[in-house]
Image 1 (cartoon, rainbow, N blue to C red):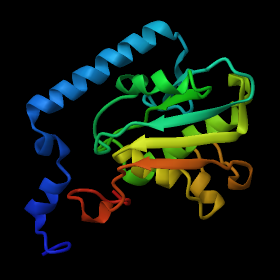
Image 2 (image 1 turned 180 degrees about the vertical axis):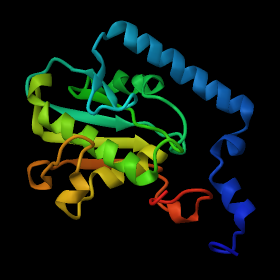
Image 3 (image 1 turned 60 degrees about the vertical axis):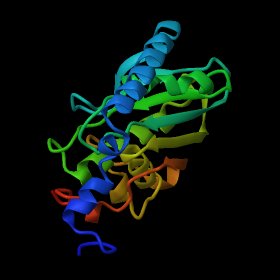
Length: 203
């Protein structure tokens, strides 16, 4: 037994949300969020594919709400650290913008092209970018929040937890954690990677 009485097959099944939901429901959920996200992007032009690093997937979509001094939410997509993009999560702006929040959608390099520690560093760099540029978005740098679903929930927890200045090191520059404070909300985040097949923070 590897973890709480579960063997490898049971652990893999526990983390396989797609299989748990079933292909029919899964496709219905994905189609719904795709349609809603496409409609949102048609209504709100935003700033698309803004780079926060030099990597091909180190990019952000930025949707200002238009309210001076507004809080900003940086949203990190899930996908088992191996799949998905920021675009299908655009629908989260449906409620955020009318509520007076700016929205920043975060994309990052996927595994296995990047190790888990590298993915965490990328998301921290994206959050640092959001705080540093909040005023340019019409927002308040002191009111930047981070949220994410599933793997994005884990990355949210990591992005808002700092142990040293090294933890805040971006792909292209060192960042000081003291000058960058934010709060996070992890939505059913996967936070026990040591039990997941094939994952290690060290590669």
